[in-house]
Length: 131
Image (tube, rainbow, N blue to C red; front, side, top):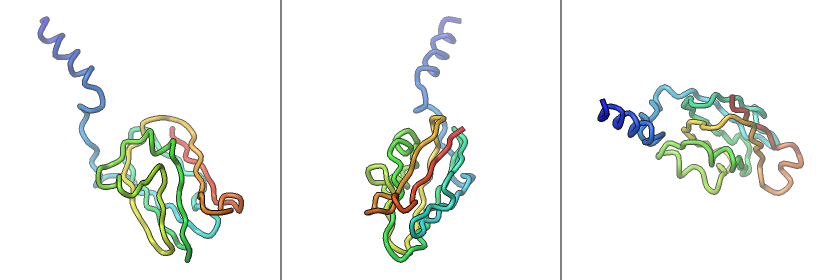
């Protein structure tokens, strides 16, 4: 009985690193359009613990980025998507697109914006709400 208790304690202490990796083929896809001075949708609602594929599409002629440092820091990012995020942002040139596969770990509301000159002042900002 003691060895069974020790085994259970070991599994509990192993924490998230012991958990199965998400099935990315079944990830929910959310498209985020990066237009001139707007993210569509401006508010993204996600559920904690669910795998998502965030599909970023820059429909504008010039570059835009999606800055969400606190959001990306708390998420578990798929290894293949890590190169799409640089210092908490997804940066795309005009007409480009990119995917980020992730699982959100914390409930909360996270601000997002485009850090290109004057873009957020003209309205290129939004929120991610995690329930």
